[in-house]
Image 1 (cartoon, rainbow, N blue to C red):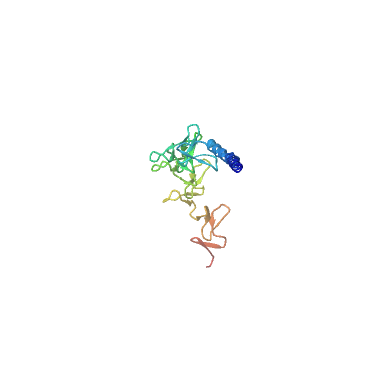
Image 2: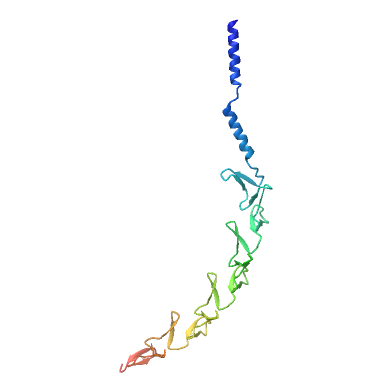
Length: 221
């Protein structure tokens, strides 16, 4: 009889110990509930990024708006008509480059943010995003209008041949020396052959020589 009471008491004591709550298990449950509770709701357009601790839009280039839980294209962009998951620039003169709208081709933004050709340029007749120089004597080089061929800008910015030169009869952008005894070398008129410039800048044979075409020979030879 005494043995039965002893065994019954031991079993009841063991049951009361196993019924006690496990503090470590409860702590993990609370943390899990807290993490789930504090995790932001991103809606159907975005996913939560644990590393960045924020909602990231599924569609590249779109921005997440937490107040509405939706993703939208930036203000200067809109959804592509053919692909709603893609953003394109609202301005047709701009294209998306690294997520930013930039002017197409040779166009540059003016002070109002509009894409235009620079002042001394105009749109090409065949390509509206390509710029050409308004002055036909100039050509576009690295985005800047430069005089064509041998022409040089005068004080008014007009492209002309230098004073001692004139346009070639067959090529208006090529310059030749006005003086027939001179030839163009590195953009400068120099005396031809053996001829030398005198104090007046005229090309002559040195003293003691006589001229044979562009060559000078000593007398008696």
